[in-house]
Amino acid sequence: MLARQTLRLSTRARLFSSTAARPAAAEVKRLGVIGAGQMGLGIALVAAQRANVPVTLVDASQASLDKGIAFAEKLLAKDVAKQRITQEQADAARALFTPTTTLDSLADVDFVIEAVPEIPSLKFDIFSKLAEICPKHAILATNTSSISITRIAASTTGGRPTDTSNSSRVVSTHFMNPVPIQKGVEIIAGLQTSAATLETAVAFCQRLGKVASVSADSPGFLANRILMPYINEAVICLETGVGDRDSIDAIMKNGTNVPMGPLQLADFIGLDTCLSIMKVLHEETGDSKYRPSVLLRNMVDAGWLGKKSGKGFYDY
Ligand code: NAD
Image (cartoon, rainbow, N blue to C red):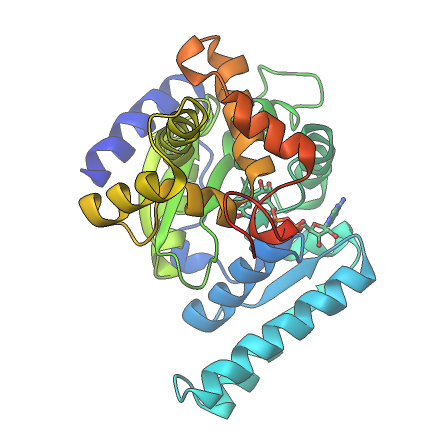
């Protein structure tokens, strides 16, 4: 099925994009990761540990970089303590990291994954620079949760949208949180993404031990398009008195064999994140079925964001 969807999107990509060669996944000798936060660090760690790939890790803030590296070291030490890996393997993985605060250090990568905060102008600015800095064969991937891949790709054209030499190498590799644990990754093709770029992105994520799902560029992609309306509907059920919190979570947990109910899951994701994704689905599609729940909005306004703020549908 994956091969069929990749082929379908690849065929569409061939209609529009350049046919420039891209490195095969095995030829990715150095990865660049931008943003040493939750997601970027997880991606860098998985690449070093599972695929033995050297990683240039860029963050604008030295403090975030130090914090990220310290966290990676802690995770590696935990793996050693649990005898999942040896001390030598942990040291070898750590040695593959090159931390830096300058984007110019990405001049020798074959594949780069951007994981900076979800701010469109920030991502557009970074991609316009990557088009200049990275080698011409390199794949430029984003980990965005909600921003259009097509728009990110357009930012690499320097105002010449019909020149697809850079935009055709932009793709999304949307990893799930926490990256070392969640196996799934969404590979999303923008309108300009070439077949070769898409195929390399799928194969590289497989090399990292992930299970890839391929989709077209559409609001929410696949995972959030399906998950967020489910969570939103659970909040509407609570808001309108169809069921109380415990009944809603219990029926979904015990009736559909998921590890936690939708309200608890929303608390773990962060209610602000859930609301912002629902807003994207609503605004980008104009479809009223994606209207965010009033209770969800009110809880975000109150600062009750879930686990991270100590209060959401549950108290922490
Ligand atoms: P985060 O806030 O934990 O980390 C972002 C990092 O980027 C920070 O360390 C910050 O210092 C750095 N940064 C900011 N501006 C920068 C710049 N100009 N250049 C280099 N580094 C810069 O964020 P996160 O949760 O890791 O999310 C990153 C991306 O992944 C976002 O697009 C988000 O939507 C997406 N995402 C997040 C999750 C999640 O559950 N957290 C899941 C899937 C996708």
